[in-house]
Image (cartoon, rainbow, N blue to C red):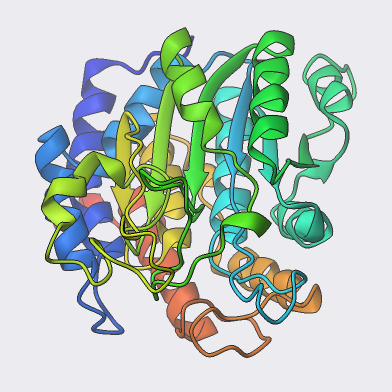
Length: 351
């Protein structure tokens, strides 16, 4: 177990305030993050990103598997081959940070249709995609290999439950993290933030939440719309305030907010940024600035996603953007987060 000294924990908490502010700037004036963040913050009573980093450092041991789930096939009425660029980059960056900082074995669970695309994002972040067994073996190899696995996960509820139980029995799991991943509401339906039902095509990775809770495994949800895994933690705060919180377009009558809670909920303007924020906080906690990726790597990851056909979920265009925000904005957020970590900042001069 990696345990940070008290001074590092204090520094992380201070940094967490800045990180939280950065990743919740409402550039698109969507108005949602200003609802999500205060509710999530009230649950923890502390900065979200630094709390997540601290908990991960206390719960994840070298060689343990960390399950990260992402991906949203959000135009199924057109094609099951269409998914968005928000989610996979955040998952890839967090996988990198958890592996390099804590020695974790990242296992990413996605829909079969986007395994190749998410693998491209992970490899653009510097990790070689292998099987789970190979990624575990790489942790003890005398020759360095930084590996992760990207696996398809069932969309059928019963098959998903069976697969989750098998994984929990097979692997030593240290944490479960969902980034921009749809969770089921009280009627078992999954919706987009626009109120459209997309249940059938999405991997039912929310089955891990209860399994992990029963085993004392840390669970973290990251989202930006109120309809992602973990948002059940603030369901009451979203009721009547979030669009489609209490009703949706499909007529199920239960709205878009999932009913499951996670131990920690991260709210961000863009879900990718939630993953980046946790990585930045972990970099401060462990005094490892290299755990946070660079603006150049951010561009590489987004371009890799675009080459695989992932679309901007807002504009509907293929390109190195996410949630309607330009490449320059995403690079700039990474640059500013690196400033919080200490890169480019002469603290001695200020003091």
